[in-house]
Image (cartoon, rainbow, N blue to C red; front, side, top):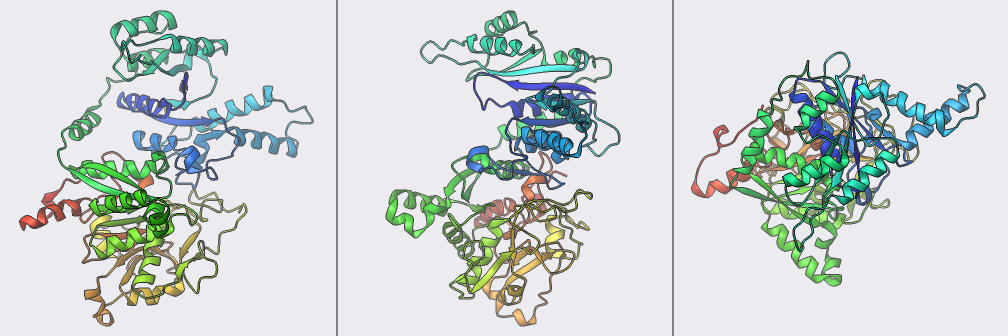
Length: 569
């Protein structure tokens, strides 16, 4: 196994994750198999309980692991399926060592940082690196590690990410901060083989030469330097990056854009919804559109905001009214829920395409119950434990403490914020939804992260009023996918066959057939979106963005057809 280690210096947030992902893409383009590991210094055992404002989004893996958002970058760039063990934290390492100590595995020896903690880190890296993540048998050729690890020199390449500041007055590129950062790295016994430098401007040739001279790194093509250091030149092919180049050129040449209102709780930090943003980008490019995301703090839409911060309130509503589609992503807690409900109502009543993810689906159910069924106090038990009309309830499998559940099948989670499963399965019996979005798939495999679900006892009355649940779990008791019928259809509801057409694991998709696009999903489709292979619910025959283009063109009385958009298989 060959290892590439990516470290950072000078300041944080330089893009070590993107650098690690990009290195993996280049190595994969050379015909090598690549896996990735992220090492985080915090004592948390995973990212599940960390605030989105502090750490960005929590990315969910197929095995239910809640991990750092950089693993989402690895999956998207490399098109692999990682495991929770690909994210190493200090907390995990210490926990594993202490568990061994309690079981007597150290045979009475004094447990210390050296050698026990350091050995645990090396053993973890070596064991995880050989796990195949690309669907093929056998270990990968190269493991890209972000932040840490120590291995032999013949199988090791260190890339140091640093900053080259540019003085505003004279525009001079300064190399001193990087030189000092490399010096500190060497003091720890690590010598970088390559530098990945970030700057406001492209590096000048004399800047490169200075860095090469004072930091003792070669000034040559990155992939050639990495392959040479890892002794892989004999087996690697020239990099084939045609697909990535084509995507970049396509994006650069896009003329039309679509305005998307993102109504959420954590809009102060865009990384809180990183996977959603990337899924929007993947789908928009496939539909020949540039995404223009307007961030709206949900609390700014509420009536209370009109009294306390009238300017923010007016600006939020102006942004919402100018949007061509509305997306309400996931979240926890009651802050901003009122604003999300208002956004869902506005989209439903004004035929604005709407996609609700996880909490966003539950919001659409609450809004429908209040506005259409007249249940003014309809709510989720998460927000009002005393509501007389609980249309969203706590999941019976959940608990506010750790739940040891089966992990062997690779499809279960283990904490309160993850239900005890990580995938939903849907037979292709829902012709409208599966044919048009999932391309007649036999089942749907998506990732979940939630504690609450649509109340099964409320399904009947909601469907009679036009809210059509088209997805359940395999037990047939929980909703995963729902659609919304228009009021023109409701008057004929007694004549319609309103059975659940898909069988997923929990109530999950909602849609209004005569509405351009009104869909709610309990799972997180954004976690499996890939460049060149957008998520089915962001891209399909009647999707979030192709409908926008159709709506833009219908004033010209042009008919919608499959030829009106691009689908990337």
